[in-house]
Amino acid sequence: MWWVGSWRQAVAAAAALFVFSLLPAAPAAGAATVAAPATTVPAAGSGVIGHRGAEDPLITNTVELELDALGVLHARETIAFQGPAPEVFVRGLTETMLYDTEYDRRFEVGGVKVTGPDGRALDAPVEHSDGALVVEIPTEGLEEVVLSYRVGGTVSEVSRGVQMEWRAIGAYSHTVESTDVTVTAPLPPEALSCLAGEPRSAMYCTASDMGPDSSVAHFLQADMEPADRLDIVVNFPAGTAEGEPLLSRRWSLASAFKVTPATASVFGVLLVVLVGGLAVLVRVRGRDERALRREAAAGDHAPVTEEGGRVRFAPPDDVHPGQIGTLIDERVDIADLTATVLDLAVRGYIRVEELPHEHFTSVDWRLVRLDGPPGETLLASEWLLLDALFGDRPTVRLSRLGSRRASADFPARIDRVREELYRDMVRLKWFARSPSRVRTLWSTAGMVVTALGVILTVVLAVFTTAAFTGLAVVIAGAAITAGAQYMPAKTRLGSSVYAHTVGFRDHLLSPRAEAVPPAQRVELYSRYLPYAVIFDDVDRWAELLAAAALADPVGGEPEGTRLHWYTGPREWRIEDFSDSVSAFVVSLTGIITNTRRLRVLNQLQRSERR
Image (cartoon, rainbow, N blue to C red; front, side, top):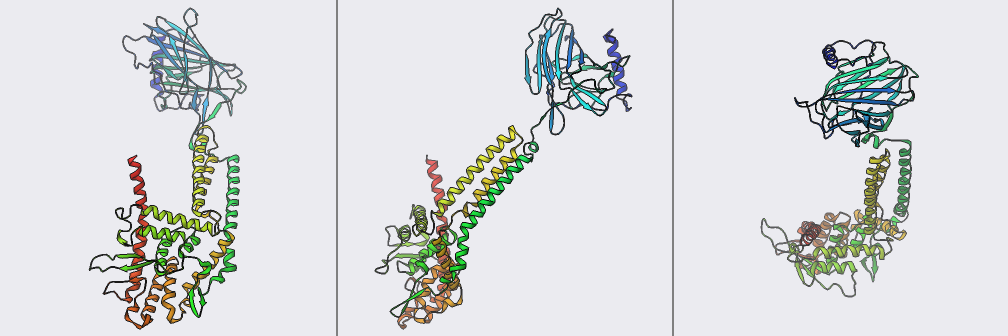
């Protein structure tokens, strides 16, 4: 070829051109202004040896590229060695390059063949690695080898014709003294450009021109290190070759979660399902609202009946304090258990004795178990609560109630009380299923859907661009989990009882509830007090009860100013009752609350023993 006469002169000329190219001058007229993109291909394989030493061969590579009318680039590389050739020379052919922020550009490299000086085919293994086709050429004892291959996908249409873009040199395993590249096509080139050096370098190659008659594109790069690359771009007239770039979407969070008509449609369907489910839920739970409007007035009156000229306490639907609390918020709360303990005391099954205390010491109480009034029966949950408090003991100090030494299984016994109250809701047909189990079922279903949504999102993000659909499933699962607390629904009977209970609450919170005959105020106010715990009005009713007990002594004796179910130390007065009972409720609430922590601690200790 015309430029291959003396490689030493060519290298010297190339070096001179390289120096001039570094000057801050505009590129030569007619040169292409399009820079070759960066690549995702590593610069060299496992055979990299770095700079050429004194004993290393001098290596040159002459690359002849021919672009046909169909857009296929036919390549022939002549790799020559002056001096002992290495055992293996590795050549990397680029298959993937960065195209833009969203796509990679692919090149179809095939027909790889390696021959020796005598034209005999050599066994050269090829391997696809990190976006490159790596060719391991056996070169030991050879002066020259010829590597041939073809490349598709290098051509794209531009505004004034077609453009051929290719990473002519992607990787060497050894330093190459001189790399000459020529590009021929059915029509002569119109413009050209090149980049060389390290993968992120924006440096122009050593030299480039169109030959004496402007019929070929010629590129020269001197002293290419293994990590260097040579990108070339050649513009041709329209009609020179056919083809378009082969693009593949590069994975990224933005592309994986791209909103498309399909994913938007899935979101729309999911929204309809969620809104429809919410409408059904509101419709089912709306029974409470409808019952309130229709039946709440039935419970808004004094909860009493007359028997033999005497007024007796009779709550609406015979609902006990713990049952009311569970019915209202569909949960067995601490207040429900505290109110039940107070109710058992008022009804004669427990006596609360406030113990003497010195200055700066905490208040404590002793609970005494009583037989209760004859002929009255207890609910199963109330029997279980008495058993949780006392066990086989006739008395118990409140401060020792939750200690593991005094009652190691107290948390488990309290849990049985809770479960029995939930069973009461089903036994009384206020709920079709236990509210606790319904919440657990829906919470579990929500967590399962969320986990499946996460797995689906990851799979879709890795293999498709429809991860947005999986994210919708995650959101649905989270919504189900959060909405599990609203899933328990009362029956028609439960809604009716709930309405009566709300009417009863409105009555107790109003001044009308204080209108009780003086001789019976202590008895009725005492029965109201546990319900006041549920309705968060305990301080007011404790003061009313203390005032009634002080104004209406039983039998006219001073001892009668004390309540039958609550006693205090010698210096205690009935005027102190409001503060005393409030402190008792707070202390009992704290002890029952701590049972949950004690239960978790016991579970952790059992798991550690295993």
